Amino acid sequence: MKKILLSSSLLLASFGSLAEDYSGHWRGVLELAPGAGIVLGVTLTAADNGYQLSLLSPNQHQQPILPTSMALEGTHLKFAADSLKASFEGNFAGETLQGFFTQGRAMPITLTRLTSQDLARLKHEQQWAGDLALGNNASLPLVLNVAVVAGDYHVTLDSPKQQSYGIPVDQFSVSENQLNFSAKMINASYQGQWQQDQWQGTFVQGRAMPLNLKKKP
Image (tube, rainbow, N blue to C red; front, side):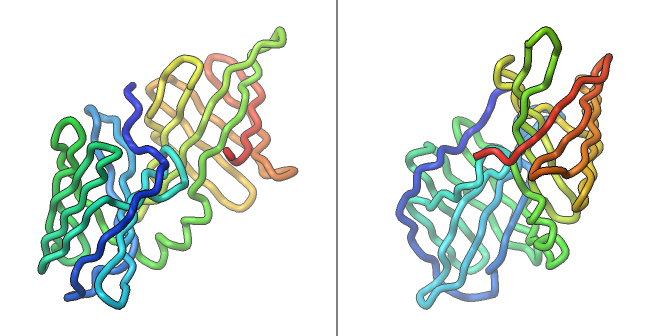
């Protein structure tokens, strides 16, 4: 599965005019293929002369990107990030931002402003990496990408060595002490406990294999 899209370089931001209150974190899932997508996040911060915008793809990295250009006129928002060869254009409607993200092709996306309950779950937003112990001193690197969207999480699994990215995770739950997930596409599941600053658990795919997950640097 193709991995999109965003680099981690920082660019200069410009500002739009203040009208309504559009400040906050806006999140949506950008569908790359049927049943497969990544989270796209737009954060708008009120400033003296408008808004400052940053762009984030938490399924891929934790560093925000500042756009090359930005304009907000009424309910219409557009911005561009030249280093990504990407742009967005859309309109606010209540608590949603509907538009098209263009990078090679135009892709529709609806972003929803995160509530206070959603923001509280951001503490679980992280990329977790570990080596799946296959046996006989063999291992397979895996990365679990946890992103927050309105009312839920959007979670994917990467297997970089196999060049497989964005594997959908269908069931996911996390608390202070326990992490569980399953991925129907690869018929796999995981259960882990929080111990010694990492998730220590078992990955099951045909057979049970140890897998410890640490925060990805």
